[in-house]
Image (cartoon, rainbow, N blue to C red; front, side, top):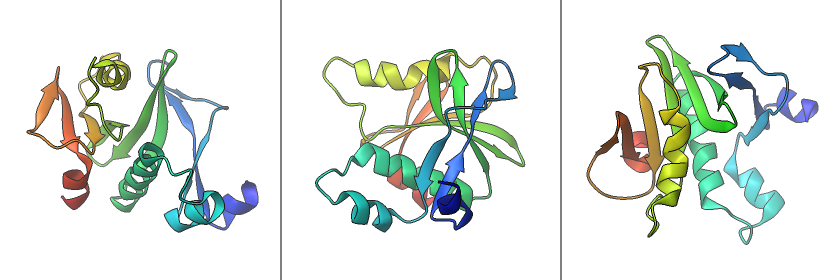
Length: 148
């Protein structure tokens, strides 16, 4: 993996403990620099739209100039902590949270709810609908977010 990250084929993203305010030594995640590489390795049959969307959001955060980490709050994971000139922002990414019982929405919101600071928090999905806020967590359509 070192050779692949050194050649910028993959990006290694480290974990950061939000409550303990420290970088963690284990649990790094890797994102492809080009989604075509994923298709070449896995084919389209194993395509998981949620993971693909997460990869796209990661690349966009980098393009926007953020320093990006994976967040940890207790046992829960925050997809991205994006650090920019105006401070930290938190992002959860899910292809959809529109299930009948609402469990997916609650699962995606729980890590963001566990953060007690007042930095901006976002839930990005492919769901269409009006702008929604869940206790200050803004739920946005990922395509709209990508275009802004």
